[in-house]
Length: 170
Image (cartoon, one colour):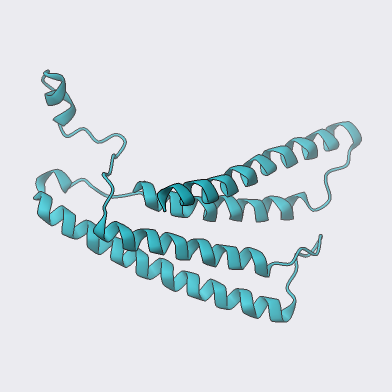
């Protein structure tokens, strides 16, 4: 499952990010050389950003790279931290699952109304449905992390263990 998520979500986010870069380049060149920007470039950028953000969400969950408050972790017993992390993963799974359900319902309503973007007329329901599916995937990742946790590596945290491993004093 890890490999599949990395492949699908990673490819989606990377392609969308590349498309944003290419669109911005063409838009800026068009404005500078011909005083004409790409029609609907703002709408396209917004939709592509949704794809980048929600495509990355399951990957961030899978890697355990969400923003955390861990100032007290060094003083808590390992068993307590494990239970705490399992509870956090359960809460995240519940919240993301609820968000997925709401987004999928919203996508259905939007499809019934025929919602489209203002300038280019791009149908919005597929994007909202994609957001819901990717939230559901992130929720599933958090459920799996309850039983198979990842080792969290927090940037900037030095609790003295690194110096101990290196044989030096902090």
